[in-house]
Image (cartoon, rainbow, N blue to C red):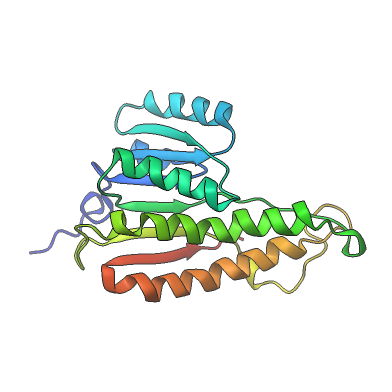
Length: 202
């Protein structure tokens, strides 16, 4: 008879997880987690706190995921340390609120879309060989993209996140792109026993 207990269904003990931006829940449940972002001080503090739990473990990799070179650096670091990745959580992201008639190009559009969308593609593509290795239909690898309900909203202005009369023109657009990219990745990677889903907090 199949075991449908919660620890059996959702057990991550002994799994290898890569989380851009955090990973406390996985460590608390026994996984070995790699966290990554460009802020080493914060990464070090989080890693030290998580390693005190001693159920799983946490290592950090400092890199700027808003560039392909930064994504490649993360992938190469993981490949140098691990031969298998069970879980990838694409959690890194940023928002930018500014007036409709004065929205900055470099930070407001270029960097935001690179971090929120492009990094998901390059990190997932780079880690696909490790995700696919030994994955089966009974124990697939998992890719989880952190999106937002903003990806479904046509209202860019007036939210607390934007501030005042500012609009989240690029943020909302980026999350819509994440949702569609998630669908494309799911179709592409499904035959390799890798599931791809998005979580859309609201």
